[in-house]
Length: 254
Length: 225
Image: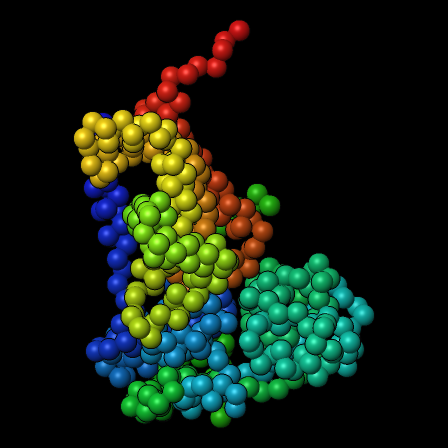
């Protein structure tokens, strides 16, 4: 009996201490960057749980230029800036748009791509034909995104519903809980391309956002390095190569 | 639906198993630490020393008053100014902090349910309070604590799903990531649910076995007809 408990205890200890997967290091040779991991094709997980996507590859290229080891990590989007300021990781490379509000809490790099907010509706929705038709309807957006503000231009706050991920928002088009979803055009196009949720896009992009890489407020040294690395990969064609791989064209928008 | 299920299982079984492993590690770590915290808290509440009593009361009030998800976020982001923990340990500690309170009350209930006569008899035999506790009271109390403890362990297992909120890829977080990259939601969540259910059933079986081994109901048989 005692023996059984001792063995069980030591096995559990072994199991537990193998879980000491260590801290996300923010010093020395690693460059850790966070993303939601729920934003195909920019950042998502492959079948082994490894992070892949446009953002991940840009991050890895930047790390390589800076002579550091890349360490992509995930963090829920709504607390991603909080995590940055709590030193959980060095930067965020997760398609975060540069806004004046966010500039107050973090230092952004130069833009690393530009993309637009796009309106999506269910494929079988014939009531909405142009962007103007979405006035007053229920709009789904991702929490803490720039799309929330854009949704308010078309409808009241009480008709705007915030979701944890764009995928969940797009799924609700089918149920009719929201009539439109505003999200990044690339994200929606990818869904259309894979054909898994029946949606279609309406009209032209509502805006062009600039996505940047924020680092912790005041971390000017890292910011300078990141900016330099970014300029380098844009200049020597690495950026174009990555962008073409995911989108068939350069999304730098310069 | 069946087609989607096989797609998910084909592609992402590896990731799901990793998530399962993480959930188990989190649960077991947090329960072990929770049991230690629970024992301490139980004795603090039984104690005659006023300050220990009140301290335990405050701890219980905080843990029972805050939803677990709020507790996790506060402990993860809030204390990072004081001490930086890895995500795993921040999560395990938050869970342990939460479990400890409930486990403490379970232990306290079990200890206090032991007949006063036991302590009186031990004391009159000349045992110190500590010796009596260790040799007489606790062994009996632990037997009584096993069923509610087993229950709390299962609750702890399910609570671990909230750790996704600090970005750790345990089973639920993995499920979210899989559904985001495969665009299949319903079936992914069904599979994740099945995983949890299997673990809970296994845990329950284990607890039942332990109960039998320790002869928890003292051999009292229900009258057979």
